[in-house]
Length: 103
Image (cartoon, rainbow, N blue to C red; front, side, top):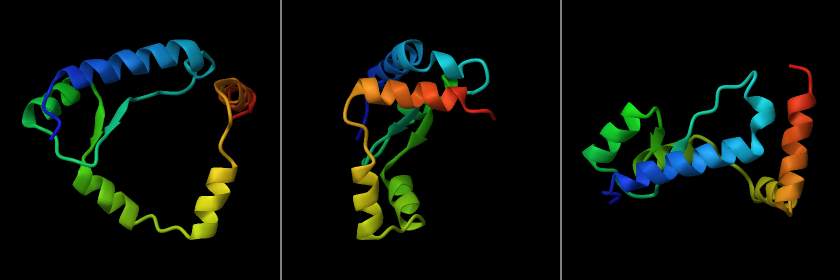
């Protein structure tokens, strides 16, 4: 069970850093919200902290529910795996290209 409120601080710090380094192009038109996903349980304290800081939480039960309503075949998993980007440079190029695409 995730118990430490430090987890929330770590999520915020990582999100802010990633947003500053990688997602500048989206800041003018997209709202980005951090998400904390665990396959376990979350304490009331973490839930309070997350709510106060607008962090979306997905605990183990919700994760299983989401996986259950999103079935996929082995071929779909293989296609997603094949489509993964190899480096952060590739990720940044894809983010920049998406930001230039007209909305």
